[in-house]
Length: 116
Image 1 (spheres, rainbow, N blue to C red):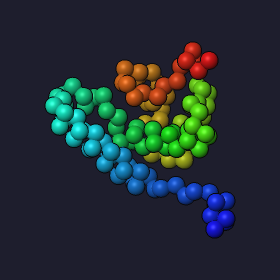
Image 2: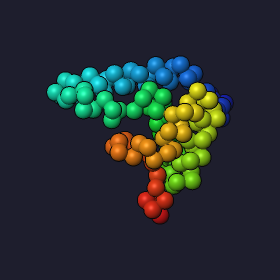
Image 3: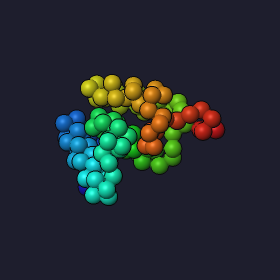
Image 4: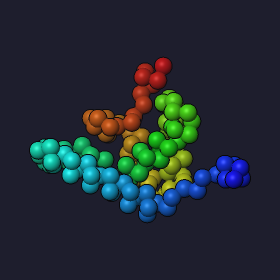
């Protein structure tokens, strides 16, 4: 079984990752609705399925690196690698690299001053 430890972990297919992300989002929506929140107020704040997939892959990478939060350049490299590994996620990756989503609480944008 020592061989299993040396074998790189096989990544899930994009379809499976998207299905898992869609399930997670539906749970988030359900919980917020049960808490009495108005969907008109929170739906725009939730990530898309592809954005959530990118976040999950980014979190996997951070965990594999010992859990340390990436600085701005590593954040860029990690997201860029996700786009290279999963080309259909490229649009979501580039939208997350821009400043367009900084109003959302879950936005992982890493600013240069915060990484010092």
